[in-house]
Each structure stands twice: as C-alpha cells, then as structure tokens.
Length: 363
Image 1 (cartoon, helix red, strand yellow):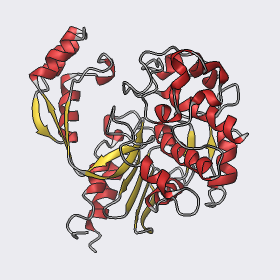
Image 2 (cartoon, one colour):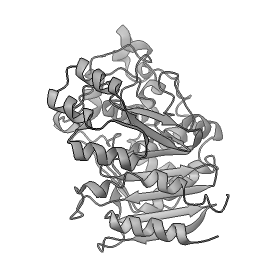
Image 3 (cartoon, one colour):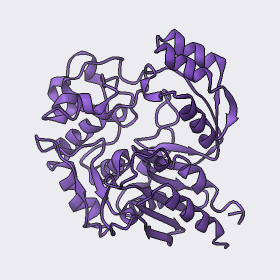
Image 4 (tube, helix red, strand yellow):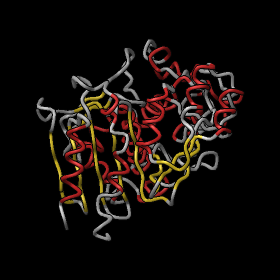
C-alpha cells in the first residue's frame, strides 16, 4: 500500500492548523500525530460528542437500562404524560425530529441556562414529534437526562464505568452545566486516538459492549423524515456535489432573508461542484449560511450511495468512518489554537479526503 495519500492528508492537516490526526485501517494505526506543539492532551470534540452519546445510549440498551430507541421520554419524565409531548420518544431526540423549540444560536439560549435538562423539558413544541427535522441541541441535552433516569447515574459517570473504562479510556473530561448535567450537545474532551477507538468500536459492530443491532440502526437512516441521519450519526455518502441555483436564491428571498444575503447568494450560482469550491464561493461573496432563515434550501445537495457514517463539530472537529474500506479517521483542532478561527482551520474537506485515501489501492 502506498503511503503517499497518507502523507498528502498529513500535509493538508498541517496546512489547516490541525492539532491531532489519527487514521486507522482494519484496526491498525496508520497515523497518530499531534501537530500543534502543545502536546498530547484531550481536546474538545464539540458536536462529535453526540456520536459518542449514541454509543453510550447503546451501552445502556445492552445492559437493559433502556428498552430501545422507541421508549417514550414520558416514561422517565411524568410531566410529559399529557399534551403533544406524551408520544415523544428517545428516537425523536436521537434523530433531531423531536419538534422542541431550539434557538439557532446556542450561546443565546442554552449556555445561559442553569439547567440544560430542565430547559429542554420546558421547551414548547414547534412541530409534532416525528414530523420535521431540525438540528436540536436541547434534544441532545435531554438525552443525558433520560440516561440519568434510566441508569441512576449521570451520563458521564455511566460512561466512565460502563463504556470508557472497559475500553481503557481514562484521560478525558466532560463539561457539566451548573446543575451538574453533562452536556449532551458537546463538551466531551478526548484524546484523538481515544475518539478513534470509539469509532473503531462502532465500525466493529459494538463488539462485546454494544449490541450489533443498535450499531446497525444507529449508522443507517433511522427516520423517514430525514434519511441523512441515523441515531445521532450522520450518513457518509461515497461522494457529494453541491449546486446553488436560481431556485435556491428565490427560496431565500421568499423566506424574508436580508436582501444583502439574497444578493450574496446570487453571486454563488454553481452546478455540481465540490465542497471546497462551494465554500470558496460563499466566502468570496459574503454569504453567511447561519443567517439564513431556518429550513430554507439555499443549497442543493446531490449524494452518492452510503459509504459509512460520521459526525462533525464546530471549528472542524471530525470523526469519519468509511465502512467499505474499514477506515476510521479523526481530526481535531484545539480551542486554544492561535488560528482556530481562520477559515482554513475548518478543514471542511476532511471527510472527502478520508474517502479518497485508498481509492488507488482498489480497497
């Protein structure tokens, strides 16, 4: 096997200010690099925490604390036994289809709260459960509340005893809110190699810690509402192409977006381009996706068949698993990296680079 693709990935990781990079193939370590000069240490995984949370829930199912994804949340929180929330299930929380109202800017809504679980419990429903997909950090935080009611332990304590401990993962931390709840949405700090170890566990079907059925369900489409997500895992297509069409621009305008943003998107018209190309267009035009009204299709995405599964996080954290070739790859950047806010530090092409690692070998 030629190591040139690995060298190219390592070079690009350095150019994008990566702090830690790990690549496994068939369980063998091909790369395990600490790159930012600050030493080997646990790094904030941001929303990749959610992928680990899915594994923790799977472990609770394996041990009999939870019957599965379709258990009603009201089984653990009786205040939800009436009204529209009575039929809301753990699956809804895991697939971002709960319908719970969620402010798009976490810093303005969740972080000021003293109790993330209670905040989620008190949230109104924007939609009936199971009818709409909307990425929801409140729902992820509530999963930690369900785990505590089901196992009798905080989610991080349960993970320490029953998932991380058995795997030999002992140098890590998990941020808690003022009420003592670990964040379900983020906050887990791991060494990159330990995050890769958890990815390998998922690739191996859960081994002896998690039922293979849970891994299978988690890493394939788990809701008809939005087939790109499993149980907190994103699907990894073999290829992805992006287009910005006149119809996308009209949709943005019809949704009442800032006219300057509508004009900026109009300067991004493209057809079937790569991730790097569409991001370059967006940055050059001054279009800000986060400012687009929720649910507006300002971008058209075309995807190939599923190759694996993945999760990413703010500032370019990535766990990518190519099931076809038995590859697990992790890329993390430290929050205290001096260039963490630089556009290139997002390394948005990382999943595509992982998918292309072994193409020439025909693996």
